[in-house]
Amino acid sequence: MSTATAETTTPSISADEFQALEQKVLRTVELIKAEREARDAEQKARIAAETELAALRSQMQSQSQRGDVVEAELSTLRQEREAVRKRVEKMLQQLDELA
Image (cartoon, rainbow, N blue to C red):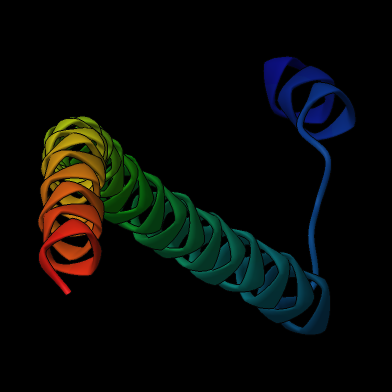
């Protein structure tokens, strides 16, 4: 009688059902692998994008500082040009007075 009880409590699975279950497990494992690879690829892409962003920010800051230097040089050159213009006008006026 113990044999009959053991058979009723253990479900019997046919070979086809077992194969189908095995295929589902294998597909699940492959799906998990693919998801992990996709996640890793996304993380690498994110890190690369963050690195590029940091480089671009640094470059932008450097260009901004260079722009400030150029602005200062331009201002100085404009002042010098104005001083030269005034000296030339003064010399022309002196030449007119001599003539």
